[in-house]
Amino acid sequence: MDSLNTGGGTPPAQKNLPGSGQGMGVGIRLATELASAVFVGLAMGYGLDSLWGSRPWMMILFLFFGVAAGFLNLYRSVNQVQKRL
Image (cartoon, rainbow, N blue to C red; front, side):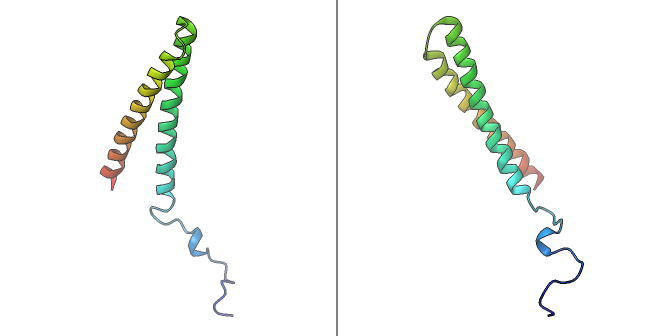
């Protein structure tokens, strides 16, 4: 019975270890930043297309702007994370 964890202690997987869960949090944050930049670019392009009647050219152009802004945000965020390590 010694090999079973029958004591009242916290199992090792649930301890608050430094760095536990931080990698997943950073990954989710980076994915959210990229997706939101692309979404904002598409929304702006769609709005301009609706306003000016230039479908789909503004949406395509602002999709590329959104992707570029998303990757710039990713680059900046990764540099911030690396500086903290």
